[in-house]
Length: 120
Image (cartoon, rainbow, N blue to C red; front, side):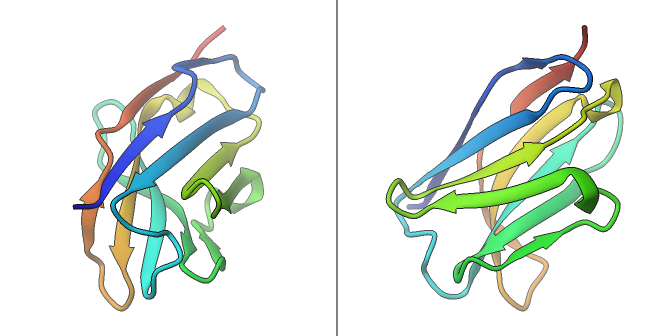
């Protein structure tokens, strides 16, 4: 059973960088052909895919967020991370990490989500 757990600060000040880590257990982030994604849901809105890092380390980003988003991984810890720079209150959301299956739009495992509020 694969499990994902998000961690990071729940409050970030405007203009700062939001940093979250997803720790994966029960499966390796280097296993073909999975993509490890960050997805968020602002209050009252739908899910927004932010980006992903693939099993081979390739990264993919939402065009609307690409300029201030970075996703990386630490294979020794079986973790992948999100950095979102220059945040504004509009970046307030529940942030999820999830495992996607290559060639599909399906996510078979999700973290429980973590609330991040951007406020001074």
